[in-house]
Amino acid sequence: MNFLACSSGWVADANGVPVCTGTLVSMSEQEMQSLYGTALTWDHVAELQGEVITLFALVFGFLVLKKLLH
Image (cartoon, rainbow, N blue to C red; front, side):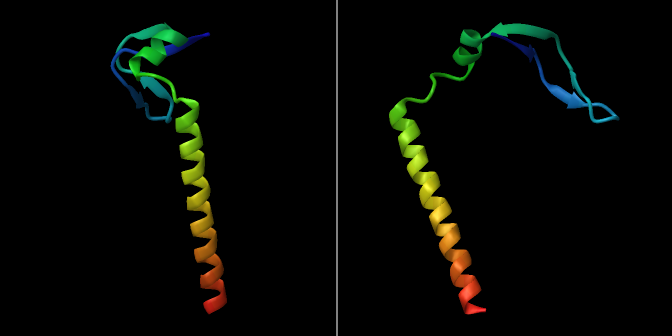
């Protein structure tokens, strides 16, 4: 799969349409991954899932307490 990238950056024109300020470049999936380092490992995924679940539980608990106190 190839991706379309901009050599410098994207800006929005008057209509809100993104416009490349440099040159458009076609990049492969491997080239895109090499720009940003390695992909997540399954250990990282499991750790992030645990943190997200904890965050949702804390927010839900806060909202329940807020509702009970009012």
